[in-house]
Amino acid sequence: MVVRATTKSERRQLSYERLDVVSKARTDILIVGAGPAGLFATYYAGMRGLSVALVDSLPQIGGQTGALYPQKYIYDVAGFPAVKGRDLIAGLSEQAMSAHPNIYLNEECVDLEDIDDGLRVTTKNGTVFECGAVLITAGIGRFTPRPLPVVDDFSGSGIDVVVADPELYAGHQVVIVGGGDSAIDWANAIVPYAAAVHVVHRRARFSAHESSVEQLRASTAILHMNSEVSHIAGTEAVEAVTIRQARSGDEETITASTIIPALGHIASLGPLTSWGLSLRDRQIEVSTDMSTSRPRVYASGDITTYPGKVSLMVVGFGEAATAINNIAVALRPDEDLFPGHSSEQRATALPVA
Image (cartoon, rainbow, N blue to C red; front, side, top):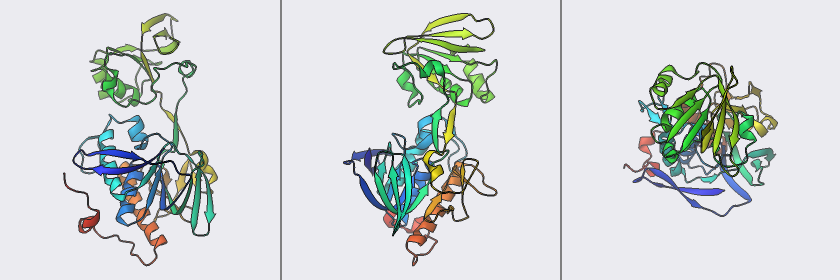
């Protein structure tokens, strides 16, 4: 799916105007990954007057933050004592849209090859990008839910691997499987809306943050410790769930309409491993200008590694700005590396709400 975004500052949210799908596109920079670092890089590319194509394999922008933790508070972003993931993504998106990027969703970049005046990238769907440089901001890479056989074998609806909005579970009987931060955070978020929330965990103790666990225990959620989901009933949709107690083998069947498997995710670099990049521990090695071992290919954010690297979102923002400014000079050698202060660039400044 290809979209072009426009900013509506009075609403402070992103809106899209769909474009016809194209098979080939030319752009100054191809940014692979529409998470926080990719969105900020898109904004900075606009400041440098560069055209941008932003690509993500997910069906929406926001990366892992938007897909997995939209309701979770983030506490280490400068200027925000606390900000929900979805609100941060909304702000970054609006900022990024000042660059007027073309956005390609549900597109996984597969092949990379050199051409006379840059690079050519082809997606799994056959879309071809020709660009001056590539910036990889793919976070932890491609992430897939950890398998839960009883869930994976169920073909009906009612299995939510991503939770978009807790209010959508109003009146539902929800079963959450897992005991880590994601499982407990989702349970706490959904409890005020759902008719009932059951948390099923195979161990005797949760591994989530203690304050979150205390909040859950004080709520109306029903906890099933040392237990697992052994059966899902229903043909077209989830209707009931059988929970087995590990030690005794006793089983209990409860009414359910939604199951949320929250066992974590498995990260993989996927096709990026074939791009001829220098890798270490599933991360891309970069220099101080964020360049990789392959000419015209740069990287920033959690996917990068170098001596002294600190994997924080705010660090990714700085790396994105560093990468874009170095790409700008690489594409236009007569320009300065320092872009100037954003407060002096009235033409690209966002309007004040």
